[in-house]
Amino acid sequence: MKKLQENLLLVMWTVSVVATAGSLYFSEVRGFIPCELCWIQRIFMYPLVLIIGIAIAQKNARIYTTTLVFSLIGASISLYHYGIQKLKFLSDSAPSCGQVPCTGEYINVFGFITIPFLALTAFLMIAGLSLYLRKSIKEEQ
Image 1 (cartoon, one colour):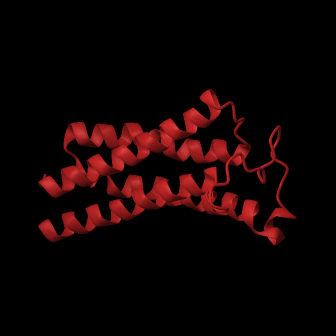
Image 2: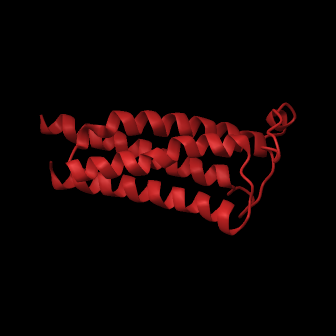
């Protein structure tokens, strides 16, 4: 495995660890109760820490398909969640989300950075890095 591929995996793993730690910080330290869409996003982010970590240990850069699928599904959910927070026509028809409404914004930095926005950013970074990893492997062959 080339050094570039190792570095890409390491950056992907770091992004997934930071996103996971951030979500745990918001819920366990700050006491923010996650809505159902937040839980679904966690379902797609948390395994990436293990999947990418194992790929690093095994020096397996061919994990890009798995990370791409997880991150694109997670990004889609994050984008929808962000949309129901920020777009009136989506928030009016948003489903009920249990204890906490999915339209709620625990944080709103600069008027646009919310928790789903942070998750979307992390998922898109991992997806982009997965595609770059794929390109690097294809060029190597």
